[in-house]
Each structure stands twice: as structure tokens, then as C-alpha cells.
Length: 236
Image 1 (spheres, rainbow, N blue to C red):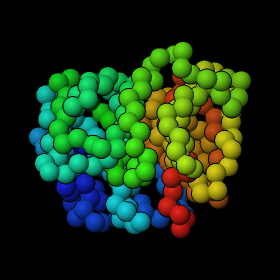
Image 2: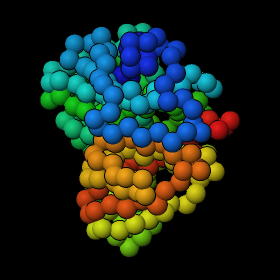
Image 3: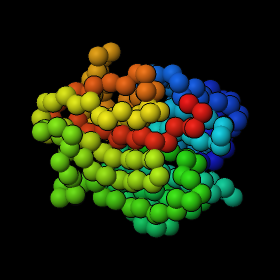
Image 4: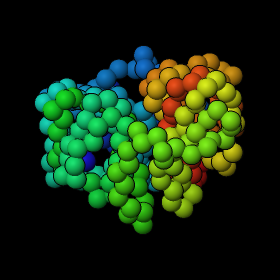
């Protein structure tokens, strides 16, 4: 949906350049780390978080769009998963305000944002047998369920095979240790600040932990994270 080549290594590289592609390593990218790259579409830039070519091309990035921008991927349709962080974006299926989670295995070539928006985007990471199209309003408080501790809640977004995607919210200060996945975990801080034994991670930080780096997480009330497991390459 939201990609026009190159969404490469973030440094002007080609599409097949890998970036943070070693899933056995702990990766942390805070908002001030690294720079933004131009997409070639006016008013649209991106910060690359990971780019992997094997076993199949995949990209994870933050996409930043000024008001009135048009996203045109040309002849390419990439299966897309994204969470709207700010503003709103419109594609062939509708208009998505902040807090909307979209999973589109088919993809679309065109989108626009009259208000401007910022998106957390995962490209080409949907299995060919996982064809569920999801549009979920995560601002609906009634859909939040009891979490792994007294002061946390979870919002299930998607489950397929080993893959699980949730939002995790702290209503008050608390610490948790998620159930260990044999490969690792991916975290994006949607709001607030996350903490572990190695430091703190403000809003829009991205963390990828292999199993060896598994952490106990703590946060203050109001912190929300995107939390994904079961999607690492098989050879990790």
C-alpha cells in the first residue's frame, strides 16, 4: 500500500539492502536515533527500522506524511499492516483516524492524507495463507481485556499460526514479564514510556529482542505498546 521503491536501508541504498536484519541481535531505535529518508513522493518521508531480504523481502518503518499528501505505489501492491499514530489516512477501503489498526493482505496502490499522519508500518510480512483483512478501532475501550497483571489491559489485534499481535496498556504503574516466545519479541511504544533493566524507551521507540534478551517490562499509567511475537524468520 504505502511503498514506492526504494524503501531501502535508510541511507540512500537500494531496495535489496538489508538493515537490522540479524534477528539474533537486540535492536533498539529511539525517536532521536537515525534520520528520516525521502520516499520520492512530495511531503512523505520515512524512518527505516528493519529491512530484510531473506526468507522474503520485508520492511518495518515509521511513515510521516504532511497534510494533503498522496501515496502512490505505482504498479506495486504490497501486503501491509499499519497502526495510525497521528492524524488520519484514507485508502480504497475507508478513512482511518489515529488508533486504527489495519491489516491488508491484498494491499492497495493509492492512499492520501488530508490532515497529515504518522503511521507505524510493516510491509510484506503477511503470509500468503493469512488473508484476513482487518480494520480495528483500538480506541474502543470496551474491547480491552484484562492483561497479564492487575494494572494492565490487552487489545488482541491478530493471531495466525504462531504469530500474535496485541496492544498492551498500563492503567497504573506496574511491571510484567510476558510469556517467553522461543524466538523473541517486537515492541513499538505507541504512547508513554516503557522501561526495562537496560533503560527507558519513550514514545515511538522500537525494540526487537531475541529470546536471550527477553525483558521484564515496567511502565506508568497511560503507556501503550504494540507487541508482536511468533513472526521471526525460522532460522533465528
